[in-house]
Length: 199
Image (cartoon, rainbow, N blue to C red):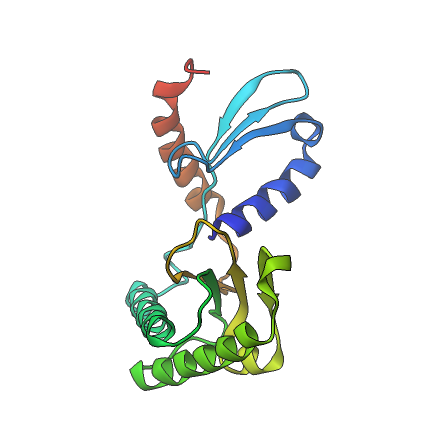
């Protein structure tokens, strides 16, 4: 999950919990490590929360997952290389969200999609006045046709080079069993126990 997705899911979950709905996020993934969330509950307790994305190994072919990750890395590298060699004067960070319901197939397709992203961003960069934007989100038929759900572009005076991240959405799977969830929760619980009294 991307940090943006984690925050969205956490806020949705918090609304369902009486303990969390009136609480306050103190830190959210600020250190880039454990815990994902440092949270003050409505009863003034400070708790650490670790977010976990569950993937059922019985429903997803691990070789196929690795292949997709490899193709996503290729797509990211191709797009970044093209952008860095371009004459776009702005420096920015791009977040590319790939749709896993329509998986990437091969290197040839990755290059074609990378060129589409490059062409699209080149046009967008030339059509915007950057002083008034900190973030731009792009979702349209051209991108979706090329297996991209969304591209977010972030601007800041502190960004000195074009950088990027790639993530994915829409992994389809059957229901995860209680046994699979219990195993993951147990492993997380063992990791968290040594820190139980830290906060």
